[in-house]
Image (cartoon, rainbow, N blue to C red; front, side, top):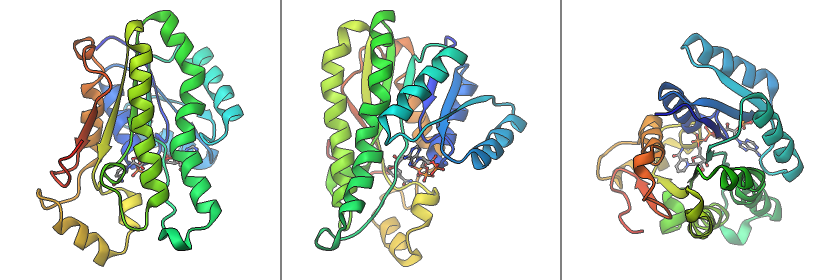
Length: 246
Ligand code: NDP
């Protein structure tokens, strides 16, 4: 792969770390955002000890002003962003009839509004340079819905609506826009689910196990080479066969 500059939001998390490692190993210069500097620096040192350099830029993806500053920081210190992976995300689960306004807003702001906040300052440069890759990390639960996750499922389904519109607007500019929809992956987000619930989830997965973060990183990397230029506006399910719809 040509050396490209990649921003992976939420890079310090389970799936983000795997995406960063894979892109770095494929020759990209990689950057991510952080909120907690001490935690992020420790993570950066760990990756450095594995031979992977990551540029850290401060930024909360739910805050448009912080995202603009973060993008300027990365572009002036690493280079124009050519690959953007909108990966940062949270859950704030509750059945809808008990859901608090803050639970709804936090999830929509972090998972969906972040796609606007981070992509908007990046897209014009990609259009001028006539090359770009934008990948949203959505979720199986945005495809099939999930009890207790109306906020999360709405945000994740919305990410794919964002993908297919952006794909149409930017196809002529050499920019592809795609979604990866992971099933249940064994990261902190899923290990925080009570064990009995997790075991019931695993029983519903035809492969009989949780996914691994690198299996999502591999799906992301599929969209990046020049040979993938014809693939835009798609949703790639990576879920062990748990859901086989769109
Ligand atoms: P983690 O909780 O391990 O990581 C989430 C990352 O997002 C962290 O780096 C976190 O940073 C960052 N983040 C959260 N909120 C913000 C914010 N407001 N601003 C900036 N960064 C933020 O989650 P996963 O790695 O498991 O998930 C990654 C993505 O994959 C998410 O979008 C998730 O919804 C999706 N996904 C995950 C699945 C799974 O099974 N794990 C299944 C399907 C989809 P910080 O350390 O500062 O909190």
